[in-house]
Image (cartoon, rainbow, N blue to C red; front, side, top):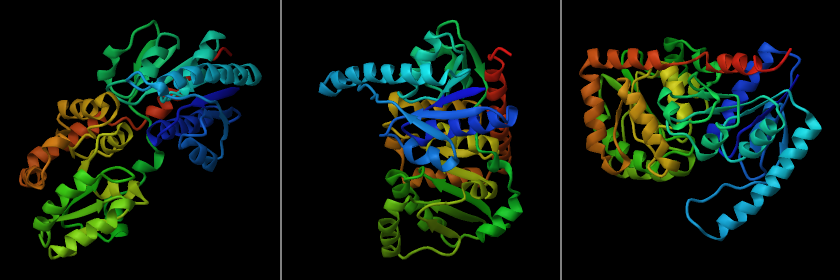
Length: 367
């Protein structure tokens, strides 16, 4: 069996594809799997590290305003379609799966055009333009959020699976995680992250909050500032007197699964995969959606999670250290509400998503 997976540009599209690929391998060990991406996206560095072959097409995303770049993207689309046609014609895949980003448009469309079973997986509550178009041509659409269903049309089957997450997310036990990170098991642990690159606005607000939480006997903070923000953050916090040992500040958390296992509460952005990992781990959260995400999809994600009682939402424009601290304090001082949020988060968790997607997609392939 030959399977093509395509999704690129950002880790939010690439890692779900990798997780699905691994699940397909478990279901069908002899499957020949390769990826399609662009030379401009992060996939060119990430995919080969996981041992999968990566083929390239030339295509660019469309900006939402008319410009020279729009014209250039229009011509690149035809180039991408030609590249995709050649890849599909040469490889003769039995199945094609796209996980978002403009790169998966030509390859999924060409597969569907040639009668090859094709599927897409949409991570966000507000779908991207490419996936909304592809939904009219593919066989199945796998939804990261039930709330995304209403945005899709066409005859494709829409299946709510949740988002695929790494298997290692749930492999760690809380006490062992706390020990590995050098954290105190008697204190509530707050995990703070603005994503792999950090978030200046979250850092700014957390600096004020951490100065006030410093030295507390009941709480500890594990905060990843992002590599590019770390030095400035430490310089600023130290200029204001520094913090005690219950505030742990790192440029980057290299073992996020362990950090998640240790956390009682998270302060996060609202990227789809980060949220999926929080939910699978049963971690309540205070979410600050990235305000410049395409179609404001992070706020849609955050509102969907909050609507189920698993999170609180603070918009970036409204965020202050005082507001974040107030939310943290309210939750720490109300164990019953925190427990209800934990239960709500766990109920939204879909640790079996990749396996479900793999089985449903493989079922399309004629035996």
